[in-house]
Length: 93
Image (tube, rainbow, N blue to C red; front, side, top):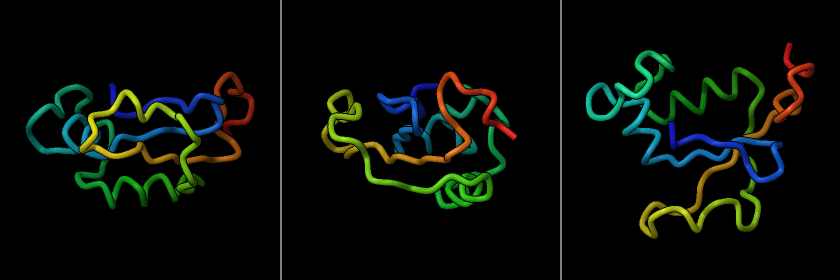
């Protein structure tokens, strides 16, 4: 999966919306990468699911991987939860 990755500090997720929609949410297209990964089929529903699990959209960090994106895609969206940190599985409830 290329559409979701850790931010540089390991404190949040960076989501490339257009790629996520093609890769994981669409009923057709590239969604075969992880079939059934999410119940959502559109981005708004995906964000609501993240909110249910305590994630909130936050400002992206400067240089948080935007250079790797096509110019038309815009900067990645960043979502954080205080209980979701890279290398800290002990925080998960």
